[in-house]
Length: 572
Image (cartoon, rainbow, N blue to C red; front, side):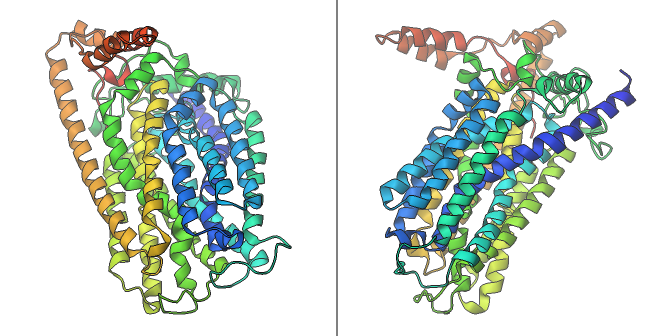
């Protein structure tokens, strides 16, 4: 196939993926975000007051949600990879959609806690499984922009949730102080309508997923036979890097349109070394398949735990505002300027005010992701986004909590939200682009999903007792956490550079045969140390009943694959 025809075929294929597959995946994540955050919207309409619960119960429910959501991420990712996105994700969505609708009949805190736990457990595998699924259709430097459109639904969902809540609360709500409802049980309350509407919508969209989503490009109903073959071939080229050894200097402003010309760059790090050749190409382009080596390699990867720590710290604002932004903004609609007197608040207006900050967050995320793909960099835009987030946090904590400063404080929240959503998806893009095996990638993203522990911390930070002071204390702690995260990303960047230099120095000492043996089969003269895995295997072998597991660990630790091979150079 000549280059011009190949470029045209690539453009047609990517356009169909962008118009048919990507919007539906974004829609799934939109409803995922809505069902995660709607409890905050409901609370602004007196959810706990109406059913006789304490305001602290919301924080407990949120903490329980994130505890199960986080702890089950690797398991959910592995199961999703085993059974496939097409069956796993829609099934989970149906369950959590039903549980969302059941909030209508909640009358005790235990009912609330159980529903939030089930929703958290079902949502656990959604994000990593869907991201890996997305990566089997798009090359690495098409990926961040598409991932931003996908992940950006968290921001769009916040805006849409605010607007939807405004419309519902305007029709069914009222303006009153934070007192229990004394009007009786007749009629629908605004938060009941909200839960029922969003829960039923999720179930409907989930059922459509069974029929809309293909297992792989080869089974994509919306592609022609020629486009299906090309869609698989271009992903194989991207992972294997069969046609390109571009240097960093070769890939700058001339790369204007990655959809006109297929991206076959050698690696996330601009092809400094040809990346590894996988033993099978089918696993690269299917939504199913995971090996014991994938699991063990992911669990023993030190980089993912560094990423996990900084991800937790940097994600606290995003996790907090998904639930608590309406409560943070509620004082801006208060009828009094006295922080010790709550006065009347306007739930509809409060939720409408959540939309502009989220819109700012979505626009900024899309811009940063486009820059990241265009310049093939991940860590610099992550750090720039964290600086923007820190700027907003500083403005929030230094401004007086008075009515006269309401507009500047609101604008500072817009700045804060503008930088909130950048780090997480670009970190995921880095993991995806630097992990050739989709099986290992799924487990790594599941471990990275533990970063949602930030949701637990946000529930512990943004407690009702801080509402009178304008949540200044939680904002200060968030400022400290994000500052530490920024420093952690800098250290991670420096470690990657040192690791790359060490690998390059080692490879230069080899002859051509050794380099090729390492690149293709992971059999270069490295003398890989398997001390941790072998030590664990020996320990398990001595425990009665664990001989089979010991054998599994020892076998799974054999060989080097993907980014473990010395010929793989990490990008940043």
